Image (cartoon, rainbow, N blue to C red; front, side, top):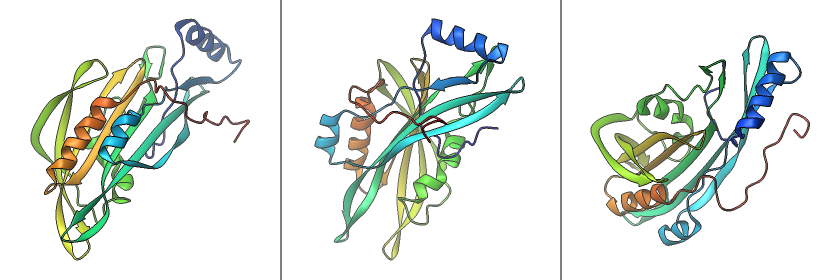
Amino acid sequence: MINRRSVLAGAGTGVLAATAGCLDFLLGNEPLEYTAEPVLPAEATLESTGYAEYQSGWQRVTEEAAGREIAASAWSVAYTNEVTIQGQSRDAAVFAAISMPEMSVGGKAMNPLADMDTDELLEELGGELEGEFDGLAEPQPTGESFALGILGANRTVDEFASEAQFEDERLEITLWVTKFTHDDDLIVLVGGFPTQLPDEGVYIEDLMRSVEHPASRDVPAPETDEGA
């Protein structure tokens, strides 16, 4: 199975290229390769919200089908914002964007995130969120959701509640997550912030609305087996 943690991103192929690739794959000539297009929030929105990048990159994930290797390059990027609570400042608000190719062979979906609902996605991403929120408790769905216009369509954003350690106290944390497909890629957007700071929620909404896919600015190309 594909490793479903720390899934990053890749870039989609055209119909003719995909058809040729599938033929080579079925003939045993080469592995089937997928690469998603990077997803990024708009630079102007990053500037207006104060969020700064702290982590980005590609990850190559593999699967087997019909005795052959399927490979995908996945992309993710994460940003944080410094907040002040009771006179103490630290990075305690986060926004992350992930893109991963929609992969299929013979009509069978191979993307492990495709069938996950939002609470399963948060469970898979828990390790990354815990890196920003100390002692993050298991997120619980609040039953609330809202619609945001993202990449030309209304997307449903689900809300979760959690707690995390901030200095010597526990703080309530609000988590928002949405998942949808766009231009042959699966897109996942996640935001988290201290519940007592609603302005951070406004910033997260702005960042979600601003995402570009494919991104209008360059990112490093994914490494291949030859370049790794």
